[in-house]
Image (cartoon, rainbow, N blue to C red; front, side, top):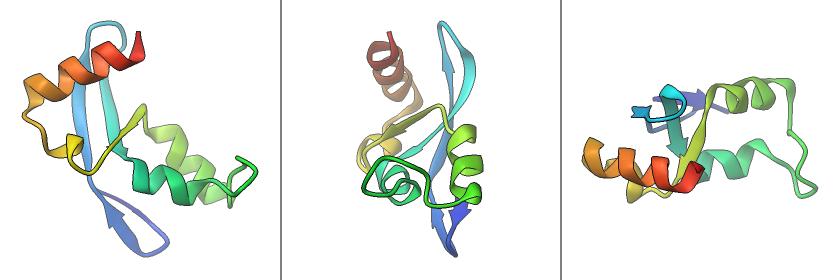
Length: 77
């Protein structure tokens, strides 16, 4: 879990073929880190975003690790 603005968001660690072990989280978190113009809403938002390798949907974050890993490997290439 990662917390931003007093709310916790799911995270998972996934082993990718190209980048090794990475942290992923949900798109909901990504949406609140950025303002309407695509900039960070705060320095803390930038710090949080830099920790996350990739964002997935709330459904995808709960996939079994093999499926989630395949999804990330496919999407990031």
